[in-house]
Image 1 (cartoon, rainbow, N blue to C red):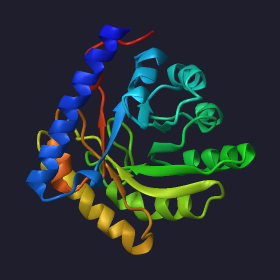
Image 2 (image 1 turned 90 degrees about the horizontal axis):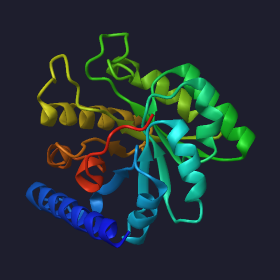
Image 3 (image 1 turned 60 degrees about the vertical axis):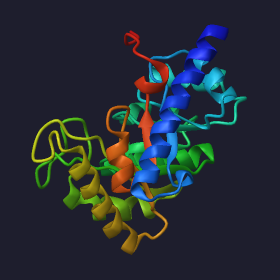
Length: 239
């Protein structure tokens, strides 16, 4: 455990240095960017170590892994983000532990989240996942709503009991005009965020960038970066 703590502390320090350098290069304050550590496929013991090292935001993408892990770590001062594609039959479980769902991309999911949040007596933050590889009315390869669908979905979230519209999220697309152009993709997300905030001023969270491209996300203006491998290392998928 001591060796693992040393390893995680060293990795976390390197990521913090990268974020700080990216902020300095972009003329931003370090506190403008929040680090979310993506703990998917890693055990609760690692989450506990990270919490002890000062991490306050963790993310998961599969409910079957996340639910027991969150339960085991419920004594820790953590904010849990759900970042994976979410099926409506998993919503009740996810609402039980997730403070924020970053992958909201369709009306049926909004309705299910609202229903379960009200039932649980919770307020769940929502980010609309934007698919920059989607056609005019479609969804992206890895989920997400097309840019043209943001306004309608945002209004639905904002008007749904138990939900709070917090902003936008994207994953740098592997296909389409933004493939291999992470900085351009993240700048496009920032433009969409500006449009969203005209109608919903409080929805100012922009989640973008991962281990390989966090610098591009910070340069574009992201408020949150989602980093897994650079902190936790490479680990085979569970299951």
